[in-house]
Image (cartoon, protein in one colour):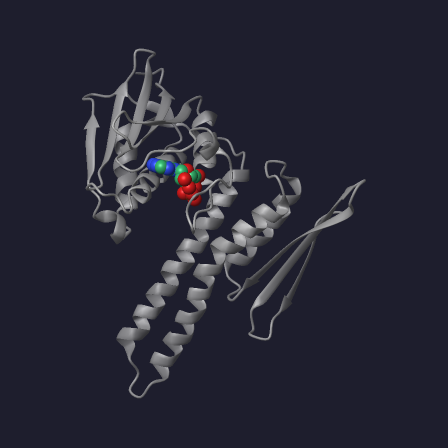
Length: 286
Ligand code: ADP
């Protein structure tokens, strides 16, 4: 039987999506895998979720549907709950006498931030499944890294962590699709910053780029956190040590880099801390 999805409204006026798919084996008979997602606003999140449920059907990259559904629900629950609470708060501020516009706008800003976070989550899940062709062009590593740093630093908590640059001069260009490669850099920098939370020494991220003797562009993101425990396992989907982590950032990043003919691997530095290496082939036009 194929994946079945039904939708119905809840008493709070939300929409519930319940998707179920059976699998059969000789020992246990039928096992039902069920995904239940409640959406409080029928915006694009609904469409994203429906697409994700459909793709569950096709994917063989996940051990069980339960794992994926638990991750999606965990990741989306927080922003959706917060959006609902802030929508109710905005309504209260607007219906106060006199209306408090400043607080209402602050609540609406929080709704927008949470909607953005939910959308980002769905984008990451989508990236895990998508096999679209790459739009390669000549790109500078320092340009992509600057944009990645700018985007990471949009988060005020991450802005305080110093990022030290060490890029060789006159670096040649690489032939890549800049958007997914930038996504890889964002992921590595964010992970580095998160790994240093609770550091005894002042946190520092170093980003380096140089051409190797094998004629590859080597980009490194180095931190002074605790280092990685298992240098291979962290690249598996859904391996996370973070309370709110999803464990797909490195899996997606590695598949992006490999789709470009490159390599992504992790090491621990001689003085502790983790070092993530991205090797990309140089553009033949250089
Ligand atoms: P997430 O960030 O959601 O956990 P990732 O796939 O990006 O997912 O990372 C998987 C895991 O790899 C993290 O939970 C963490 O345990 C480990 N990891 C990633 N980057 C670092 C780092 N810079 N230092 C130490 N551990 C790291």
